[in-house]
Length: 220
Image 1 (cartoon, helix red, strand yellow):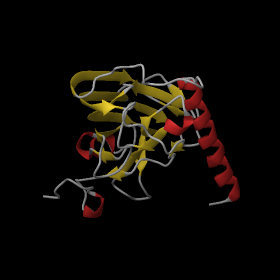
Image 2 (cartoon, one colour):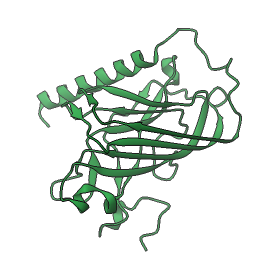
Image 3 (cartoon, helix red, strand yellow):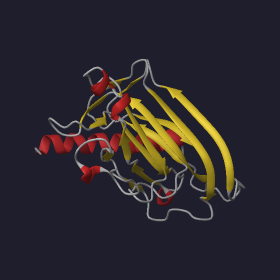
């Protein structure tokens, strides 16, 4: 990787970090301790977001979901423009990056990581139309077997591609929250600010390469 490209990626990452901070605001004495939240139990919630018509600039962040102070479990579905994970690969990755974890007014409590995504090739355009116009990805929130943030209150999209990304009809995010696992006030992150701005790790259960099946799934 050239120095120029490294510098460009660093600038994008820095812009994304600043944008996240500005998007969620900040008070030096803010705390979740005054928010009761839900200790545990079910909290059925479905959030469906159409992305069509939106252009996210390089380094741009689009906050999708915030359940603070509750950290939750559920499912995440994304349809977006996509490209092969590597040249000639039949497994695709989204151009946009989906991250999850917790955004806190205190920097030390902020922890965001890319969401491990499963590529659903049977209903994606590379299979259906031979194009990278629309790929479908699914994830478990959280996914303790395959990585990502262990406690999730916030889910965002961030553009790390270096170019603007324009979304078309059919590009959506669907977040289905099924259960509250606890309160971030009782189990906070303390290693922050931690912000992993790498691309999403992609798993594919339907290709011939079983090394990318991920954990917790059978190749049969």
